[in-house]
Length: 405
Image (tube, rainbow, N blue to C red):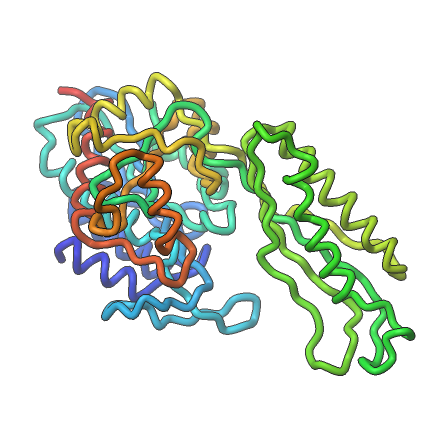
């Protein structure tokens, strides 16, 4: 199957975290066909392919496989109509983050590296990781003996499709992707009839006040020169109009680069939640729980320089840009930290270049990017060409920069 058709197939069959059985089977089938020793079920649904080609460094190439509980609205002929069970509820599922691009590109790179073994020496570890979106997928693979079973790499490499022009790549040394924390808040009220709010403690009002006050964490408690994002992505309470519920739930996403800033933000969130509950006369203390947490992805400076030169050979030096710190998050750094080796993770342009006509500088590109559908949008739709070709070539070039003949 050619890569464009493979991508469309993956796009039409998205799967949620730790349920990527069909996607994993596709990756395993393609790795075996390319000649990789392939193992399935690593860390749940993870897949590892090993291709040994003489003495030399070991390069880990990583792609994440999971999709999001989002209803796709792109209108594409290959748009997802999939639904899946999530905590007992049927939800729509779509590759709104572009992980289908990552899987397709790694399969294409595996094919090319296997076919061109006369051009490199060493070992390729092709790692297809589950559950990046919810966190825990990389850690699960490490805890399942990834490096004990398949060998420790000398470098960890990967890429993430982004709403920058297809044919443009973004790589930077140092902090590249933010640390991520997911926080669950449960506010306890006292339910009652909607006509008699004076006899109840309304958790909906409590939650609304809390959401508004949380907007001051970054604007009033984090220094202007620091980076932090606090987003309330979900607020759940009640069932009908005339019943005041007992409880309200908030789900927060916190992004940061500096551990001190992260700690300050989390402390402020807990303080605000407890203060608003007290101000509302809550009958008991709220619950504040950090559900998932993974660190910032930090690119090794020397390794990023080496890979940057390899990427420039693919698309031209003028099309390799420094995107600055990305407040999106990635758990790919867990692999590098666990192995004690350098990480290089870059952005792969996936947007229609026509949308960026006339944009000459990266600031201008960034301005246009803010106006088009981005990752996690139901309208996010990377263009197939040249995104896949550039993504494959970038992985191959980056890997071969570590494994010369």
